[in-house]
Length: 209
Image (cartoon, rainbow, N blue to C red; front, side):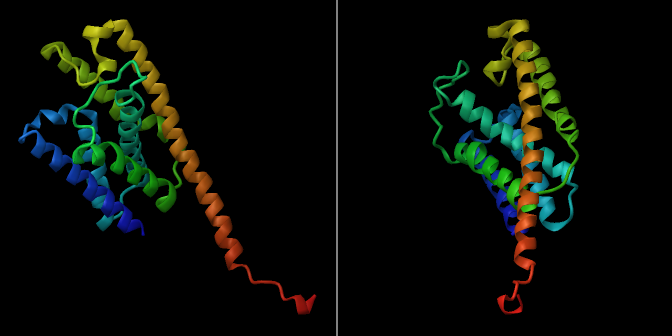
């Protein structure tokens, strides 16, 4: 089951990236987006994990980045009530459904239900290294090309203070999300372990009472 879920996650991520490239006629500019970069990460990690062991902290990090992609898209970018809502004519395209919905869901299910890995709580902070590095990359790039991949880090519209505030908010939210992935994984591991112990315990013979 573990291999199946990992392989399915990797295949969906690769399929989403390929579909996006086809729709963009091979324009590599889409790789500036966190969505695509996180898809590359989860595809690589899940694909390798099919054939050889990958440390739990690496798989957890890839899972977090994929979940960030799905949650930010559905709660902020595709939500009409969000101040960062962006109308997307390709919301129902194959690559959009794969990268923003299917892959994050598969990644979360694999981590929480199938793998249920035991990792340290402080990993949630270490996992923030990539999102913070991406933020620096997006801001430095934006200073030169005068455009930003996402509205919540758009210095042209929000100004430096606005971007700082949103960035701090996202950092805290992503840290809490990482803690949630670790905590829920531990909870499910404990609950399922109890169920297995209960099933393995021999039934009491009423006749011997």
